[in-house]
Image (cartoon, rainbow, N blue to C red; front, side, top):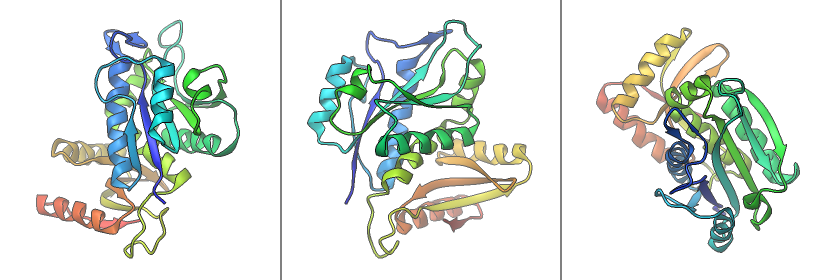
Length: 259
């Protein structure tokens, strides 16, 4: 069965959320939500949104949009802030209570975001938040780094694709992809990734990453056993990975498909 996830970009419209040096939380999270949604859809997870433009809904209205959608999970994305800039950093995920599948999803996402480079501040109980309290489905709220931390902002900007992929794959790891065909033998948790390069030096991986992104490929880096692997896309359907590999090869890259 294909699950449906409703993605909520925090704040919006006249509600900027947290701000820092002209940067607005509402803008960062809308861009991130859209990319997370694209990755989920590539992996056959149904996606709906509370907003896809710069509009404002109250937290209660967001919860109602989620409830009316019939979605199976509610994922709200925000960015954090502290009283004094550049004194706190990291990611954390908020839940109504630390139980069940929502808690597993929160930990899976936090772990993957820590792999990108964020400090993992853990899972936090917040039973007073409307979007966690009033939603009828399992709900989480991700604080994707501190907007008033220069270090977290650099991570957010320089590793945007990896961050979006970490959130999406944390969700998929928890609920499985929605694809079920002969190409993956019904194994919805198996993901096919197109690898473009592997390096011991991070700089070499970063150089290839930037080249791929300039050419419009959804590239990211994962670190495994001391090797920085540059990959593009993570797909539950093998055919989609094959199409991505063909695009990369036609552009001149040597690639192979891995899982």
